[in-house]
Structure formats: C-alpha cells, structure tokens
Length: 488
Image 1 (spheres, one colour):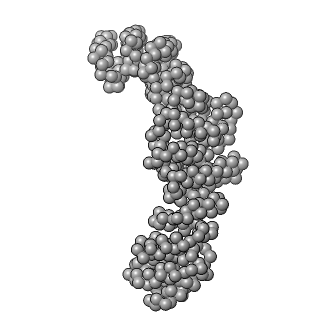
Image 2: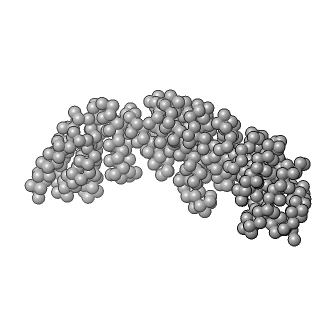
Image 3: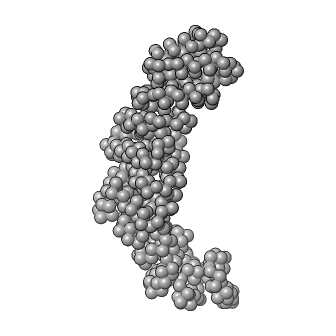
C-alpha cells in the first residue's frame, strides 16, 4: 500500500503521523505534496473521517525542518476541505516560512494565495521573476499591493516583449502568448477599481503586454489556442481589455493623454509606422491592431492634441488597407474620434469614404460614415465645412447621372445617403439639403428610385431626427411623396 493510500484510509493516528512526516521529508516536489494533500482531504471528507485528517494536519504543524513540504501538504488539505484547523496550521506555517521555498513551491503559493494572506508574497514574486515564470506572476498579481503591482506588471511586460521577438524569429508559440495574456489579466484586476496615480504606469504596461501578444488572437484558428477564435480572444483577454477601458474612462483628459503617450513610448512602431510605407512583421501589425481597437474605446477621453499627433496618423495608414481587420479597425477608430467631437478630420474622411464606395464599403457603411462626419461638423458649428461635404456628395451623385443599371443603383443609394443628412446637418443648411434632395428626386427618371428615397426618409431619417426638426421634415416628406405619387 503506498503512502498516499495510508494517509487516506488508515485509522491509526500514530501511523498517519509517521507516514506524514516521512512523506514531507522524502518528497522534493512541493506541488506533488500539495496534490497529495488535496486528494487525501477529499477522500477523508468523503468518508467522514475528519479526525484522521486532523492528524495529518497536526503532523504538518509539528514539522520543523521541512516547512515548505509541510505547508504544501497542509495547504492541499485546506484547499480541498476548507477545514478550520487546516487553515490555522497553514497560517502558522506561512508565518514561519522564510523565503519562497524554492522553484517547486511557486505553484503551491498560487493555489494558497486566494485563501491565505502571504506575508512573504514579495519574496515569492522575486523567485517567480528569477525563474521567468509568468504564469505564477499572473496568479499572484491580484494579491500584491497596489504599490508593488508595477513590479509584477514590468515582469509580465518583459515576458510579452520576449514572446513578440521570438514570434518574429519564428520560435514562439501560441501557448507562450496565452500565458502572458493570463498574467496580464491578473495584473489588470488592480485597474478595475483602482484610483492610485501609480496605476497609470501599470495600465501602459498591461496594454503593451496584450498588444505584444495580440498576434496570437489574430492568427489563430479555433483549435490552436484553447478554442479561442480570432480577435475576440480568450476570457482572460476580454477581462483585461474591459479593465483597461474602464480605468481609462475614469480619468481626466490630461491623465489619459499621459497614459497613451506612455504606451506609444513602449511601442515605437506606433510612431514610425504612419511615416513609413514599409510593411512590418505580423507581430507588430497585431500590436497596431490592438491599439486601434483600444483607442477606439477611449477616444472621447483624449485631447485634440493627442488625437491629431498620435491617433489619427495611425488610423490614416490603415484606412485603405487591404487587410479586413485593420481596415475595419481604422474606420471604427475614426468614427469614434468624430463621435468625440474632433471635427478637424471630417471633410477628409468624407472624401475617403466616397472614394471607397462602392468597391470597399456598401451603402449602409457609407451612410454611417458620412453622417458621422456631418454630425461632428454640426456639433462644432462649422456650416462652411458641412457645406463642403454635402457638395462632395452631390458631385458624386451627379457622376452617376448617365443611364445604366449599375449607375441607377449607385444613384439611388447615394440619394438615400444625401437624404439622411437632413437629420444631421446644421439647421442653417437644412433648407439647402432639402432643396437638393427635391431637385434630384424630381429629375430622377426611375419611379422606383424616387419611391425608395422618399421611403428611406419617412421610415429611417425621421426616426433619428431631433424633435425640433421633425415638423418641418414631416411636412417636406409629405409634399415630396405627393409629387412622386402624382408621376405614377
């Protein structure tokens, strides 16, 4: 009968005590002892023989020379059973333990940290750093103090940079990236409710750790990394991203600006890519994709200076990318910038989306993008620039005036986009846009196109219009429908 079986089944206190001391003395793998304690605890609990279980724990508490082994065995019992006596013994052994107890003890500390306060946690973290064990650092991160979490974040970030460099040399794997993501999620727990200014640096380090390993989410298929599919990432990844966004949105603009600038300092490619046409490796491209997605959610917290100097140059590089993920992220980022009221890019963006239609974007996306540009200008009270955007759209409609099925479809869709702007343009331009729509609808040779434009305004545009516009728009739509019906 092996020793573990004796501990799980013996009814003799003396035998249990002797076997416990012998196992603790002879076993060098601390996690093996922990697993033994867990299995013994579950077996004794199932059999209802808790007295013998306490004999095991008592023997651990009497151990003087092999404290780490005794703690590992007693810790396994406690984690499995939540026994109060085992908890007291573990607390006592932790106070007596000097140092981390060696590399094989690291996983045991990770198991105990959620249940027992670890006075020596900084020594354990130092041992994990020495062993470059990023998984242990991530598991312990939620339990270190806010003043010390930057040290853990720096170690996790260093591991992520190592993974990125090895990925570019072709020697990294998805498991390496996944371990870093899990560790970053552990550090990010401090950001959920934290307010200390020192956490700004932690935010930057966690952001760049996730960015440096984002290639694993972009490149993986469903069976390569724990069933995670594409950019959505793992549950740990999503939890960490939520913490990053939540923390940034609680700060003022100056503080968020400083955090974003710190991130751009950690990832130099964010600065040089907009000025270069050179294609970088997939790892760096994955980092850029992560940052565009992150900046999309915090654009409203940034000052105009940071948006113009850092955010927009990045988006401009990818706004016409042939890669779908980067193309979509760049446009989502620009829409977020416009929604935040940064109207300087609106006319340029209106030109871009009109050029991309219909080869790269459809009518719905054109409508959303063009309307976002007009709204940003309306909020900044820039009627002259709004007029410029409308003129660009009208010129594009006039280009489709010739006959032909395809041109007819494009003309109808562009007219619907123009009609949508009655809900968004500044009030002093409302009459001009309504008149432009009237003229184009009246000149439209296809009754189906005239009907579709009127229906689009009636069914969609009126719903989104401000209350003060609705009476005027309702009357306008009624008159336009009457003219359309009269030409049946």
